[in-house]
Length: 242
Image 1 (cartoon, rainbow, N blue to C red):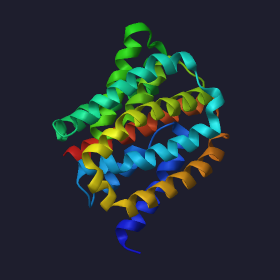
Image 2: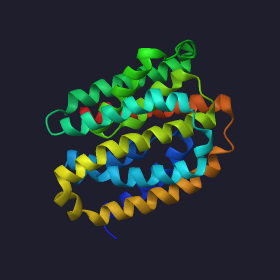
Image 3: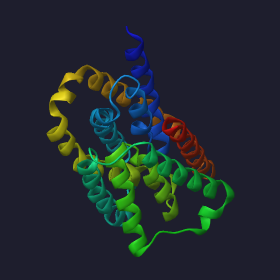
Image 4: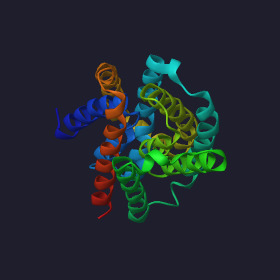
């Protein structure tokens, strides 16, 4: 087994587990892992497939907790943003975009840990804007989960509703962006089908195991856990951009 395949297996297992607990993490972990030996933009397209598969498995396990109001307001806007981001991917990107995303994630993490986030709520037009931005960034850099979860913290959802709604929205975004990636990078994706298959299996296994861990996390601890993961993601993006 080559070092790259071993790294991919480990990353996909961890990504699936973290996504089950926090509602995001597959793209955030797998994209930079694949970027170690594959072009960054192609890595975003490749990860979209195991992301969709892992998200679908997670949704099948927890779908009953979805907040339909948030799903309709935020999810549809995210899907539109994801489609736009995928179409713009070849023209927009680079370190500056990563830095903007990292700063935003660090701000949200700090707000949650200091209590500021508890006074923020997204309603009306603000909810739509947050949805579009999260989907747009996801289509561009493959890290929509972090910014989506950062925005969803402002809706005051319970732990189970948060995970279920974030997962349903992720399916919306994947359904919008994946066809674009297949149309623009189909041959390149086919050339890396082994990596896609390995990552997909690893994410599914990690998702199933992670779901058991979620049951033992108290509500109060959950939001702090999400904030900590967002902070780690923000720092990692800054390092990548540098």
